Length: 421
Image (cartoon, rainbow, N blue to C red):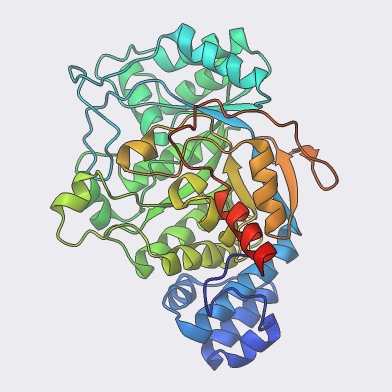
């Protein structure tokens, strides 16, 4: 396990951590370990912990993870396909979208989207994740046509596509009621949806992130409608910008309330704000340069504790935090490393520098180094293959890495250092 001093060492034990913690925090954690639900206010308290109290939170989250999902850590072999980077919304936290007349504007043909899906399938992928900007010239039936093109070319691949914001846009373009539109997408081959565009489910913060984007209530309405149509979704949070503990706890509590009603979320995915190329960081006086290491540790741990028994898959985004930090999160509540991706555009456009792909073999190495059992899953968390006693077939990365970092170099460096001792 990576060593963040004073926080997630294997020693002291959970019991010792609880003993060292302040009485109020120890009582909250003992309650959570006993299976009782934390309130929003209690979650906010845990987000504000430091020192020995924070160490106890991280230990407790790891213990609850063991209770809920055991020692398996999962990943999915998936390809991201961002079919257009043209978007008229101009969200302050995003550097992905460009105007349609910009030099770098892209709009993939349906043939190319389907070709990339087939290439992913031939590389062992079980899923394609398809999202794009809100292009002003998008035809009313375009999302349906994407699904039909992919499923015609690769009938058995799972299509995980279209954020609630894209669904909002599709409804607006097609002038079809939400429930009927979701039914149409499902019939065309939509398997599940990413629960992105959530950002922070707080009206005041959302108005500063983007004046025009769908509201928190609209996001929830679309998510609930998707669940009602039998379309499962992820749940996300974007943190580390102009937000704080009160917003984080309220967001997680709202996600939990939806899950209690619908049961439609497959996982919770914290997404650290990537600041380097964004207008939000350049122009907003209160914007921070993304979450700190401690904030990321807290986010995954407190999410595990608040969502226990409701959403038991806590995913860490290696493309946002990097493979080494993702490795660390497996020791404080997370149980899933997300997808291999193969291609990634949105985080890179904002300034992320952690690469575009981690191969299955590299995923397995990261998971084993964390002392966990590597398991390849499908989109809905069914087991594809358990790698407890063998390795995946080794494949070369799809994207040339000759000018990029090796995502498991930190493991190689650690092994070399240990051998030298």
